[in-house]
Image 1 (cartoon, one colour):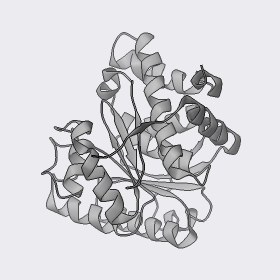
Image 2: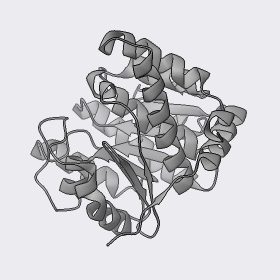
Image 3: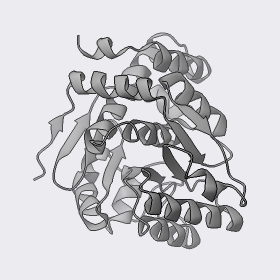
Amino acid sequence: MTAVQFIPGSSVAEYLSLLRRKNPLIHCVTNEVVQEITANVLLAAGASPAMVVGEGEAEDFVGICDGLSINVGTPFSMRVQIMKAAARKARELGKPWVLDPVAAGSLVWRDKIIFELMRTGPDVIRGNASEIKFLAGQGSGGKGVDSTDSSDSAVQAAVELAEHYSSIVVVTGKTDYITDGTSTYSAEGGNPLITKVVGTGCSLSTLIAAFISSTDNKLEAAAACCAYVKKASEKAAADSHGPGSFHVAYLDALYNLKPEDFNA
């Protein structure tokens, strides 16, 4: 059985402070559905977004940014080539990058792209339980972009996937689990309303890229990011009446949360 430890509030405070001091520039190669919330989440947290996706400049921009986030939500041939080129450049330059394997297990062509990107060496793979279990060879995928498995059921799959690809794996759900194959953290809390707003998972992946680009301790930073988002969703739910108002309240919560709020 995998030993799991909670990420302490003091660590969340530390890594949130680091992010806000550095204000990292994050290169977002993401899907068209979530670009607005992705950019706004990064800005609210204290990072800077850039959506540079042209075939003539996306690869070069990797040399300028602090971190890269690749999301395969709406792939097409040219965008796939851009993703692969950006991932290779990030690995060449030692820039941290995060892969979001959206809907892994749903379609053969998509799965081929995801596995090719995984072999390029992402620092973090962030997915829901069904996506992570499929990638570890322990499931058949979820219902489109939605998980049909609990995050608790995917912990061992996440550990094995992390070991196989020498990456940190983040599996999100009611409880988030963050592992490098040796050490595993959890982040609890949050509110189910976050699942009713499109792009909250995708933007989390990009926010993880911002957190890990601000420190060498990428495992703790990724776990701290998850705990920060959990607390923000709790605050947002308390100030909202449904998905629409939650969207706005969530951005406000990310912005207004301070490092000292996690030391209480």
